[in-house]
Length: 335
Image (cartoon, rainbow, N blue to C red; front, side):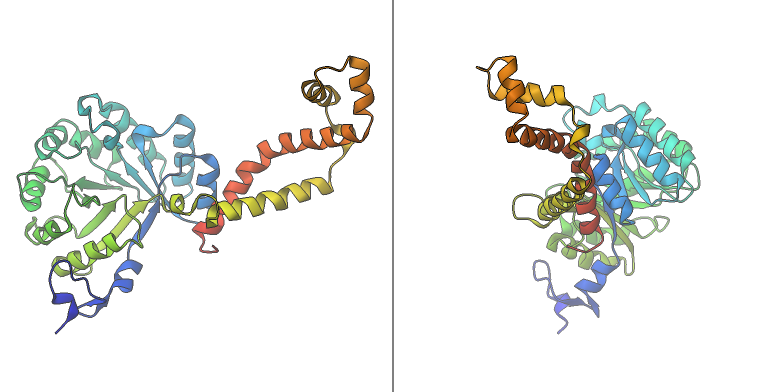
């Protein structure tokens, strides 16, 4: 008996000849959690595809994204509607669509965009699709891909998808499916067998790691109904590797130490800000007058204070560089 046919909850090592590893290897990974310039630079250096949410991106983050797609970078752009899940009427769709338009116009390669939705509500999602969906399609144009976010509700996913596509004047490029089991239980994937044939067999799983067991279950179920479907996911994968004793944090500490040692090799204590060092001594020894502070500065303690000042100044520059290096090593599989 083929293990892949044992039924829900009994995941197997293979499904009709497809191993879990083989299915995972087909998944395109987009790195999210990249709003920090240092983290973005690390992933970019590693050549990784990126994911941003339009509603939470700053102007500087959008500048980086535009430069990235201008150079051919592979980008997945979510609307960020999840930020407004408790107040969907406040979702700034006009602003989000303007961001979509600018990214699409700058891109030299295909970008994937998520169509409007209201998290957790099929009927409200259909409303915003009628109000804003075609505006998104106009903004991104024919050279880019629009994915339909599928919500759970009273309607079966296939019924919801059929109604959603009827709200739009152009075809969609595939589906974006929540990875939270409460938002979209994995067993609902079997109903994708009944979606309109015009829907491409492409599924993006929102907010889940490629190496997650939960993702593997979804891949097995998807393979049963859409064999060979194009799959992708996005996740802030580095987050699980941050913290005392974890690989990214250890790599950052190592990089920072090496950078500081290199800086020390070129340290010239004649270039320090004497006034800043004297201020540090006054704070450390508030009971001493100016003459005593100056004499103290001329002692070995002064050399230590100069070094401390240099470290504090250098760390502001070296810290982000160390972060970039540690993320690069993580993203390129070196950790």
